[in-house]
Image 1 (cartoon, helix red, strand yellow):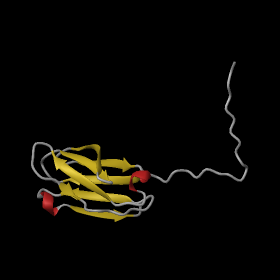
Image 2 (tube, rainbow, N blue to C red; image 1 turned 180 degrees about the vertical axis):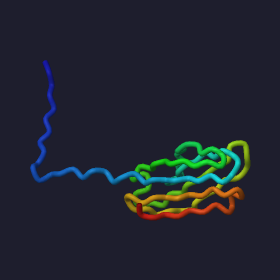
Image 3 (cartoon, one colour; image 1 turned 90 degrees about the vertical axis):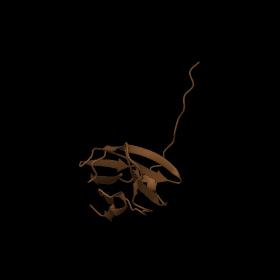
Image 4 (cartoon, rainbow, N blue to C red; image 1 turned 180 degrees about the horizontal axis):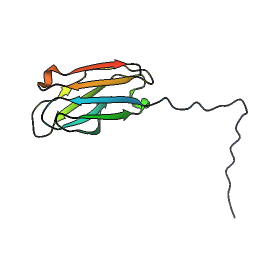
Length: 114
């Protein structure tokens, strides 16, 4: 015996495509490699690593940032402290530019439309 599952879609029912992910560009001006993470609702999700004096691009699913503040952190591998963007409120399609300074406390962030 075979069981089947049927779904009836209304002709007026259209699915909205999910919002584009949020682009994150990190410029690391520190000589140490950095682990980059996004923090939402107290949960940290590692995005990847940016090498010393290098740059990296990451994407954050919009549902992670939807309706809440997020924070981007950069933690040096083999060093102390961390750089943080502070709380960011984002709209779909926006871009985050995070500059990790050689002195971590002097790091800066900018959010803009593409």
